[in-house]
Length: 110
Length: 113
Image 1 (spheres, rainbow over the protein chains, first blue to last red):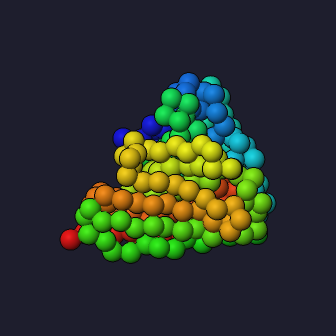
Image 2 (image 1 turned 120 degrees about the vertical axis):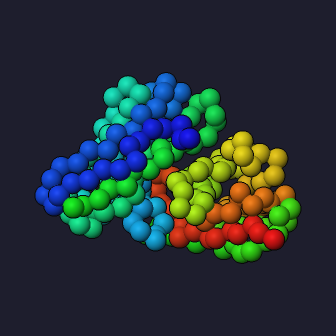
Image 3 (image 1 turned 180 degrees about the horizontal axis):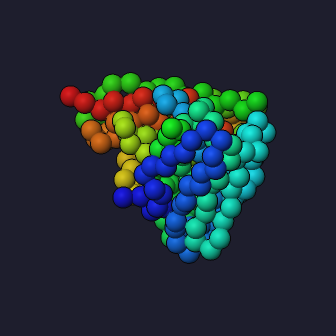
């Protein structure tokens, strides 16, 4: 069981807006920034968002991140077929003295 | 462009040892905390260990504490993971990562008799 809670699956049609949630506690999301990772089938994870809402160069602005209290969200607008992937959230955890991950959300583009 | 390239994975028997390496380029390696994260077949991501920029602080997941040792050589821009007393449940792809910047392609460790 993961420390951060994500829905196991999400779906949308091309062009739609989809949101993936990530719930934690005061020792992680509540006091630390959140990162998001995209893992395309058969490949290594890639940094999609860091420090809650910062996009690395090359990540389209269709992707956005936000945080409120002990929860965070990743929003994908203008959904495209190539967005079909697993998405993970992560944050440092003060009580564990290390990083914690969500269980991952499998996004399907219908 | 940041590149992280892992090596050293393979098949090992339970109780055996393995040393993973990660060669970094495209970033000022000595300025960043570095991490190892693993992914068991068909499972999610699990943080394994991290190490401070100068190697003075190291942290481990409970599942590997006392068996794995993380280290780095800033002169060689390299990160290491010494894995001892390996168990079947350590079977996974191991990634070298600067969690806000980049991930390597991973190296597969299989623990089986």
